[in-house]
Image (cartoon, rainbow, N blue to C red; front, side, top):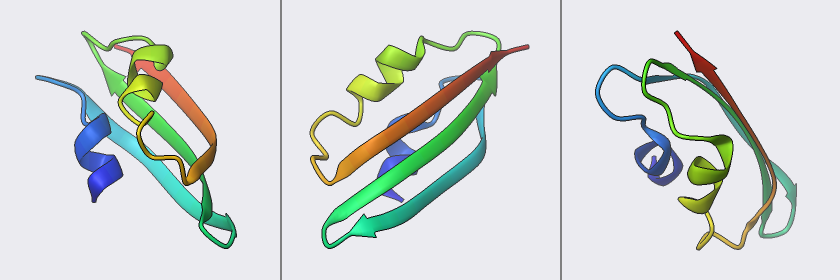
Length: 65
């Protein structure tokens, strides 16, 4: 839920796919796909997760409508 709240695009955007899985004790991977008209860059969404050190492997896809 914390990851979803941080990544939810503004206005017309949506999270279309989100997977979080355990890589090892206290370490997780994340793949997310975002779709919308006014999305930020993948780097901007990655910055929203920067204070979550347990996320070791993060893949962010953005799809502009």
